[in-house]
Amino acid sequence: MNTKPPLSPIKTIEFRDVLFHINVIPSRVIVSGISLEILHGETLVLLGRSGSGKTTLLRLMNGMLLPSEGKVLVQGRSTAAWDPIRLRRGMGYVIQDAGLFPHFTVAENVALIPTLENWDAPRTASRIQEMLRLVGLDPSEFAHRRPRELSGGQRQRVGVARALAADPPILLMDEPFGALDPVTRAELQREFSALARRLGKTIVFVTHDLREALLLASRIVLLEAGRIVASATPQEFLRLDHPEVRAFTSSLAITPGASA
Amino acid sequence: MSPQMTAWSFFADHRAEILGATLDHLVLVVIAMIIAILIGVPLGMFIVQRPALRAIALGIASVFQTIPSLALFGFLIPIPFIGGIGKRTAIVALVLYALLPILRNTYVGLTGIDPAVLEAAEAMGMTRAQILFRVRFPLALAVILAGIRTATIITIGVATIAAAIGAGGLGTFIFRGVALVSDALILAGAIPAALLALLADFLLGLLERRLKVS
Image 1: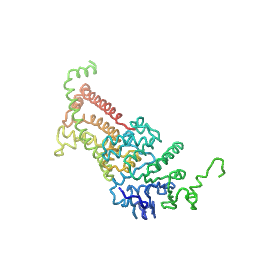
Image 2: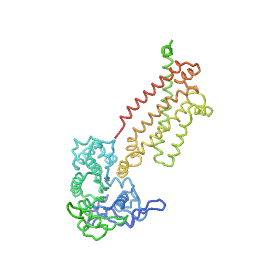
Image 3: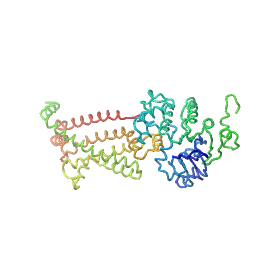
Image 4: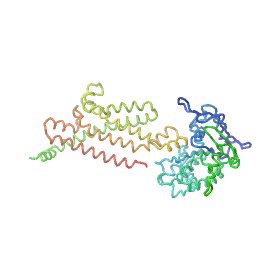
């Protein structure tokens, strides 16, 4: 782990002119010309329509995909040079359907990485309690439930607790609140936004929802057809003059009673 | 005397013999099933990792299923080491029959898992072996067991034919009954075999329901 004090901003993740294509014939380019620096402690939101390459960038960060050209560096080392298991253990991962293990209890799900890392039982047990409280679930009520006995929102909370359990410096989130009803989604967004500020982790968050991006991001990176077309703070982002930015901002502009 | 009466009195007179044949039958089935599970389940786990071998393994297992059982027993007799007359040949044939349901269900169970679960497992940094043994296998267990249940019922039935090559078991009564045109003898083989199949189906069904994870 990087123990240098953050005198200058530390590049936690860096893309150097990355291209990724699938090896079908003819080969299909998914993302190209990607150069991006993700700094220590920032919450970077990758925004884009479906199929714009957001998830591909996320999967290039944790080595589930390796770049066809260029390099992805995590803490200064190329993902191709990392042991993929060690790389991923340092990155919490939360996805849309939570992906909780149905045969594990909530506690066992949260304890996944600590168990794989051979933490001793008391440390794991206290960590489970701590993590469940962190995501607003009462351990005495939820620890022994199975995922099927939870609501969608509760499942996502457990997903976040599981991702944070081994205290990874980086958190990757792929539309984690995308499948929730609007009320629950807003609730989790607000809570997560507060949590993210408190945790001080480097967070990469994928979404197609501009509202969510504006709420959570310290920086928004907009993707269109596999390329980065804008990178700005939420305040700056709304003022950018790019057709794809306008396409997204106009999606916000629908208010009741307003004419289209 | 009515045929039922002859059957009942035959059963009563030959209790010990019928029980002995039932136990012989059960031993054949259990040995064959243990071998078939020991081959089928690991092979199923293996072909999940090697898609190229999947079609070949499932294809070969399917071919054995299509060979009529009596013919399969016949084919095996002249083969050295595994062939000949007796229990060993019968067990080989029963294993070949039981293989397909076990292999196919193992494969289907291991591959039919929610992709979100597998993606999370991989992204959280589980190794391939950890994903196989801690995620895929426990989640596939009910489906694998359903395959074992089907295979067991098939094997109990097919094992009656093993008597044709001198393997003993309940088929002995059936073949003798056919030769002597005796309903009582046929039933003395068929009824215990049917009861065994029902019992196995019931017990394995109970186990399967307990292992099911929704």
